[in-house]
Length: 129
Image (cartoon, rainbow, N blue to C red; front, side):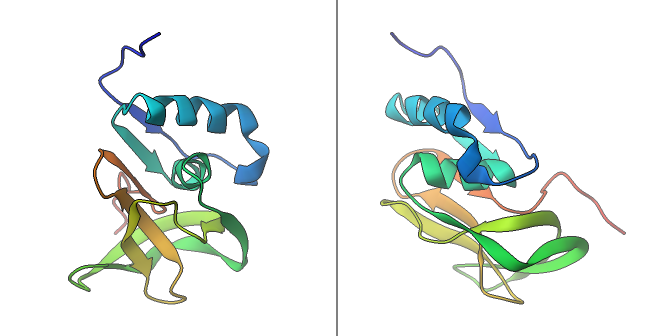
């Protein structure tokens, strides 16, 4: 049984990512078939859980149009739009950090070391200002 997709996007949404069991199982199947995967916001958290990572509730959620994120390798700062109360804690095996929040150090993005699986906690489609 082969999945016939060029790729999948796991979009944003509300709530505790650990409560979305069916979607997590679907993502696991996509990862098993090495389907290119992009997670955004809640999708970032779900990808982490599906791949074996963990999430946690933030003490103070990130809810603004001006959250600074640092690109992990270069430390270049990007101003991002965010609206979430949970974050990725432990990264899954074979994933590396991609972005980190400049205010509290929480993970804001990750990418797989070998396969086209990547995700960001912020909203790359937003254009504030």
